[in-house]
Amino acid sequence: MSRKAIPMSVVTRFAPSPTGHLHVGNLRTALFNFLIAKKAGGQFILRLDDTDPERSTQAFADAIQEDLEWLGLTWDRIERQSYRFDRYAAAADELRAKGRFYEAWETPTELDLKRKKQLNMGQPPVYDRAALKLSDEDKDKLRAERGQGVWRFKLDHERIEWTDGILGDLSIDAASVSDPVLIRADGQVLYTIASVVDDTDMGVTHVVRGSDHVTNTATQIQIMAALGHDHPAFAHHSLLTGPQGEALSKRLGTLALRDLREQGMEPMALLSHMARIGSSQPVELAGSIDELAEGFDLNHFGSAPTKFDVQDLWPLTARVLHETPFAEVRDEINAIGVPDDLAETFWNVARANISKRSEMAGWWSLFRDGATPLVDAEDREFVAQAFAMLPDAPYDGETWGTWTNAVKEATGRKGKALFMPLRKAVTGMERGPEMADVMRLLQVKPSL
Ligand code: GLU
Image 1 (tube, helix red, strand yellow):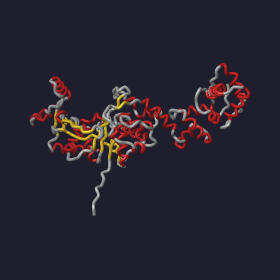
Image 2 (cartoon, helix red, strand yellow; image 1 turned 60 degrees about the vertical axis):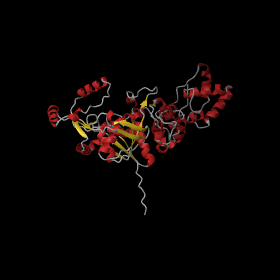
Image 3 (cartoon, helix red, strand yellow; image 1 turned 90 degrees about the horizontal axis):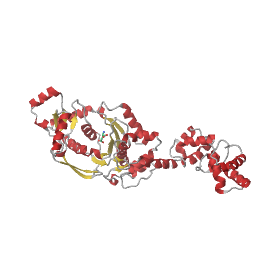
Image 4 (spheres, helix red, strand yellow; image 1 turned 90 degrees about the vertical axis):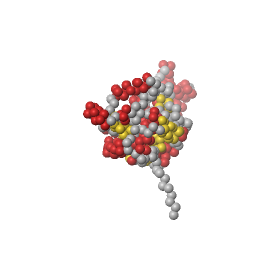
């Protein structure tokens, strides 16, 4: 009997640190990883990188989950690095036993000085490995004077190569990178090693993250190899810039997902946009996350920085609303007090005229209470005469036609001269929904 190879199933992860709120930049990473897993029928892990006890908070961890749930980016598994310190300690021991881990005692000021000297001499500011030359005696002395040192991973000075899912073939000379600090002097385990251990233990097959992580990836590939493991496939997406190509990093704080939610952005607008910008495919409004996953392919993305303009998201949000069927908003419409028999008509009118959900309430109060009429001086008499010919509310789908016909006959006005002053007087606006629908929804007789 022949044995078929079991296909390795795809496992991705999104690994935010719960030290702040998610913003559009993080969303790009989360979404790409989510879509890759979804498309392959694999697993998507939410991993909270919370090894920093001072900056990580439960409130941020909760907020991250809330934001992802709002967008429908739900995870198959959640992990927290703070529960896994024993695993990181074991990996550190292994690196120590293999001679790939060494203690160093330079203070930040000393390191800074070294870097400045190197730069002055036109050399790259790479850690000079002075700690590797310390004798046992030196080390005891330093430990007595300065306490525990930091622990650095000893890179093999060779080229580190991988084929990046977005950037293509990459090659980084390990000698151009400082031996990374994996454990701080106070014992705090740093992301670089924690991430390596997690990606291995959790069977992560694909890591997509921002291109600011390329050097990390190089060192992590070596750390994984030192621990006897293969590395996952890596892909680094470009970073977002503002509409003019300006750095977005400082403004990301104002582009928090929860703020966009509060401002009334629709999840599918945001997801559709973020799944396509920076790729060769045009931004199109998708009907569902499944549809986005179906069409998602890292091969379409390039290395150039990706321009992001939050203003692009509002027209898409309006389009989401225009395309939202009544059944999906029935409860919300009930909640603002629209009578059941008018709810569907109300939605058909409202959705074509709103750009955010919250604007529904305004339309309903206009129909419920009537508008402040907008009447030009020369139309005042005409409008008064027309209003006098209108019976009391409620109205129906025929009211507008019957009424305007009667007014036309009585006044001789027709076309725009007939309809426009009436529209303005009834709705208080020059443009808006079909007047037949307006009359049907109107709960009070308009008056001057
Ligand atoms: N916590 C890291 C970050 O937010 C995760 C990076 C990674 O995906 O490995 O930058």
